[in-house]
Image (cartoon, rainbow, N blue to C red; front, side, top):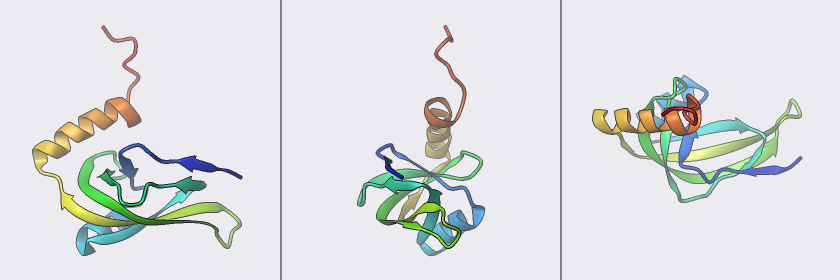
Length: 109
């Protein structure tokens, strides 16, 4: 049992439903596996399950807990700051693909 620190600027949703609630109502919650520390108040880029950048969100709270199945999970509460424009989404998606989600470009020339 230990805490991981999430100090990067990525907030990736695993569930379309969690993302839909955030975009529809302006507030939402996502659940991540393991105990994690999230920087409350920080603005981050939110990504859909398919790794597309969709919005800027603010982390309003997080709660690490052990659920009824005995798993360590962290609930993260988010507030929608704004949706990204098409151009912003395209650029952020390309950057995240290279930096976080995608290919290893260390051997490219």
